Image (cartoon, rainbow, N blue to C red; front, side, top):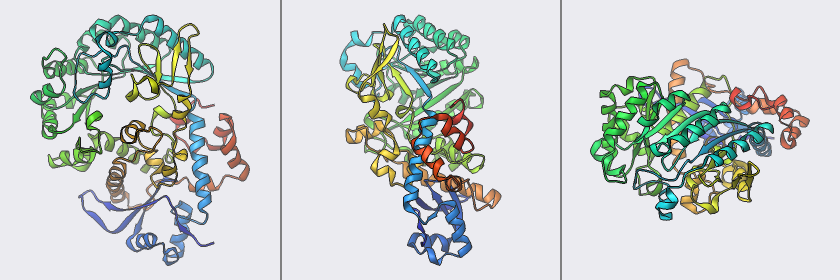
Length: 510
């Protein structure tokens, strides 16, 4: 049978450290097997035209072994199912907890993704999670743990979770999380965290994420206190206080219409304050979501944010390191190119599809924090009496939103790179969270891998930049493939694929 180009093939230029395209060379990326290879211009051209017989025989054999060429497209489809199912089965024992102590907030930011909650009124907003509810939640966690599920972290969200009036509740939650050896992190506006410093040190909070939108003038116009006062100076003071007390802070700098330059000017303020020299401080830029979500005319989008950083003097690597979507991807690719592991072929975009439980003050459970307070999209509730999570029919809809079940994704060359895209963005764009969401991913991925691959190629001159899952999958016999496609035993699956996955994926999977 003649070979043909994999349907999951991406062919790109290679961009060197100088920012110029590497002449005479192209980049092959196989989104199914994670194979990334440098080839000459003619080979790439032949592949683009489907002229596989024109490729040198030795090179053709190599590309077949790496997965860039195939003799059996049906085998590719089966490999997708094996990889997607294997990953899901190994990771189904892991979960993450997100708690909303209250929906109340001391800010009234115009772009807040939870803005719909304000329509419920001040009395509803002021309700807080009771200690009885906290006990029911952690009682439910204990039952999950007894079944082998490992809940490793507890994230505090709001509303605003760190309101001084709720400090006793936060202490109680922290105590219960500590009893289960959970790492605690918080997404907060930072305005009242000075009241929580001792508590956060006592319970060894892993990280605070705090947001600013630019310099004082712009921030105080966009991140508005509900009583009308400015917020910039106090947030900066509190960030410095946390860092001085060795509480790690990640600063999110929102970028939206009208604040591109102001957002960058904040970097100079951070430099002057000495924050950027601290190992307990980091920052990133992010196009705002909500009514300004990326990909529409409402906001600049992440590629434009990257362009803004580069125009202000950063190199591509520096800009990518400080832009959220680029940074995550760049770190993933740099790890892949170290060739210590294979591509992590995950079937889901984020924890919302496999193991995140977001619980509001009333005990309603959501799969994604962008849908909190939208009660018709809750996946279940906490039963206080039984101390058990009770799930409804919405739960399986979320847990089956995986790439092999999304028709457009199952045929897309970015399948295990994009992983279906964000469900919340799909809901905003299409009114259906079970749809794929492509957004800006292709542009971000193509640009990032071209730069990271170019830097790697120039350093070591290797043509095979990553490991490929093609050979390990080809080495499976028919019985092993059947087990991976049908077995519900994590031990059976683990014993077959343990050498293919990163330690954090398979750790305690059995």
